[in-house]
Length: 390
Image (cartoon, rainbow, N blue to C red; front, side, top):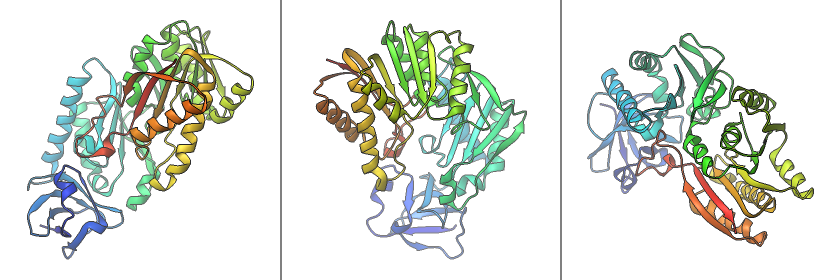
């Protein structure tokens, strides 16, 4: 068996449940170990820590699949995928759309699979999943019986694994878009060209809680993408909704989705930079009763964190200027590198600069179909706070 032996003292994080071994933590690599190979991970005393796949090109040298000595073969992947399917049946029994496989959260690092009605969208993000790609596609077809499987391995992160970007239909019939249901509302989703896998399923439960806050309110949804938050707010009784996104394609899809749900008379979508739009609205002394901030990740690395903090503070500060007492702010961050504590401090600073006080109504995270695995803080990435202006 190919082996990777860690330096002394580098096993603690692995023993606490993490699944990543960095290049700098490795003391000895077995002769002939190639990228994509399954390796045993040993501590410096030769004790087994687990088994995973190796990639010389990646900063994360080994991603652990199991803490036992076992065969990493088709039966292994069938068991893991079946476990992920069974878990979703328990936590999302009525849903027709959800994240089916969430990488490390399902002990399948580097593999993402979303289910949209009768279709699957898969991302193979690491060398270890890439070498098993054909087998995994075959197993997904066998276990899920979808009408089609679309691959969206078109993310820059693949370059960090020395892999090219790739996308397209890999099984069955793959339409360019499908109409899905999220909390009983309809959304047309572009599976082949849309952002990420086409629709952000991790916020589904957070969109549903708008039912408690939207009725009769004037709503502004910044970074609205295809209108998911905005349309939920309208469906839950908002008097008016404005959605803003910089993407023309996203805005056009949002307009179509509002019409699909018979809510086009309530929703108005605008193509604009959300930072500029918020600044303009403050200048016009506009007022809203409910503002939703769900931006894309402002930072993909620790090095960019300072700029991200400035960005988060700016949008929250301007949003709070547009809310009077009794107004509600739903503010989110999907940047893992911005911790919950840092995000809280950003909002606190924005409120202080506005001389406003906030009541915390709810502290939320990603849906249960994006399981948070204890020992891997990276699996908990989504922060969602709901505040009321006092």
